[in-house]
Image 1 (cartoon, rainbow, N blue to C red):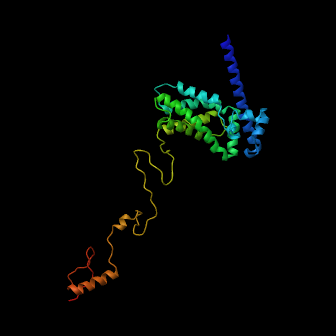
Image 2 (tube, rainbow, N blue to C red):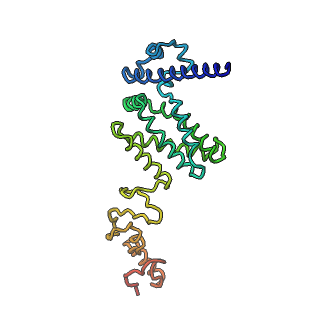
Length: 279
């Protein structure tokens, strides 16, 4: 009975902490949107929630930390989804499926949409978001490490986690928040499929510098024909043609012929001069 009472009290305290943390995050985002980041103080956020600054600093070190705090319930849900994927599934595919399942509840959260609007209005805050995302990437790397038996600090788990974060970020920033969530999921699928295939070039890619898909020879760029290459070649063929002797060469050959009795036949590697040797 005592143990059950203690457990209930602990559960109540944790629930109250989570509620306070969520209230601080939402108030910070709302005030940033209304006033602009530089016009908001920690005191403003505390006043909106009805707590003291001392209590605020039990949760966050700065006001930006409150704005970019992750909902721990969503993170925990994502890690549970990843752990539940079939063991034989490739790590990147397992992460893709877990991310896909976690997105609808995330984007349906009004606080998440407010934060996205905030980032659109104040892009200078994006680096702070990326920094906060590093904690999620670390958690995902631990999940991939558990599936593969590798250390979370080794290259592969961190690479897969980074790839997963990149696909989500790319899909989210390419998606119109006023569009159905299904469109976001389709974008995520496309990003993950491209990663799994090695990021092959799209069939409709255009322009110089494009890289041909494996098994296909790239088309050489053709520019204007340089002098000596009227057929549009790069000029190498023109360079291979023998040089015509110029007037100075012919005069030098004539002097040599005068000295040798006309037996030199011209310079080595050049055609003999057309001038007749003197008798």
